[in-house]
Amino acid sequence: MANGPADHPRIVVVTPVKDEAWILDRFLRAASAWADAIVIADQQSTDGSREIALRHGKVRLIDNPSPRYDEGARQRLLLAAAREVPGARVIFALDADEMLTANGLSGGFLERVKRLPPGSAVHMCWANVLPSGDRVWLPGDPKVFAVVDDGREHTGQEVHSTRLPVSADAPSVTVDDVLILHFQYYWWSRMKSKQRWYQCWELLNHPSKRPIQLYRQYHHMDAIPPEEIRALPKSWLSGYAAGGLDVLPEIPDKPSRWDQEVLGWILEHGARRFARLDIWDVDWAQVARRTGVAADPETVADPRTDFERRVHAWLRRTQSRATERRIRMRQRFLIPFGW
Image 1 (cartoon, helix red, strand yellow):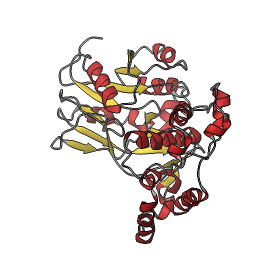
Image 2 (tube, rainbow, N blue to C red):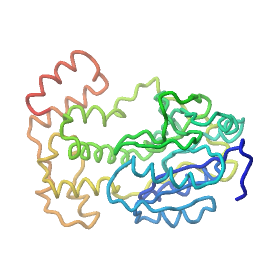
Image 3 (cartoon, rainbow, N blue to C red):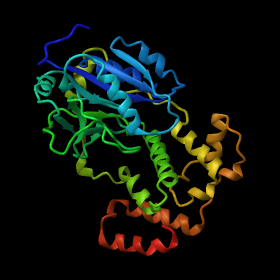
């Protein structure tokens, strides 16, 4: 690809991948419609994701050899590869289940971003596509999805890391007319499995976090304010549909990799270690059977006491009112009991 003018940056998309075959082809077709280059960092996928990535001409596939979950490390890996694209760059950091709303393909959105000064951070909001496929949850919390690259170093953190390097004094713009279609909630059961995984990961890596903290943090989607849900505008899809792309993926009928990892932790550490986490809505013996893992059903059975079950039931009932003073006071009462 020939170098463009210095004042006309290229658009580079960077995306981490591990077993994302269910949506990866759609993501890459959508991103190829507006990006100049796409960097995929694959972390040992076994579901055909690598083969899918290699079918797309704008993709550069690199390896993430680490066995660990570390968002900061994979972001630095992707950033280094993106900076091998010559010339000025605007870097978009998207997950494989994210796409620009199709109205961003026209109307000058990308040209506006390209004209921003180096170091600028582009804040955008998620439009979380719900399982019906015709409604979205709009939480209205802008996040950094793109930067006009200025070579700044990126640190990041292991989990819930800011995706790109941004300084506190960096120029910033919030885009309100183009959003990020997010399909995590479209496959609801997979999303819930990921939230179970997060809870277990936090327990093992940040044991000072209390079970109630983890419950409230990883069940926010169970209390979506009705006023944040709206119909999915056709204009957010039509630009892709005109190019023959139906962005709504098919939902596979199989256990997610997140549940398989949680099952491994239960077998390694014992079910009792995770008793105060709300992960026991799953038949883990069935997950073991479906994935070919040898597991005595008794070792992966629900280890909760009656009291622990009642606490989880109360947390579910009060999730939508978690910030109320009365609820918070009752939560404090549970602290001496290990919650």
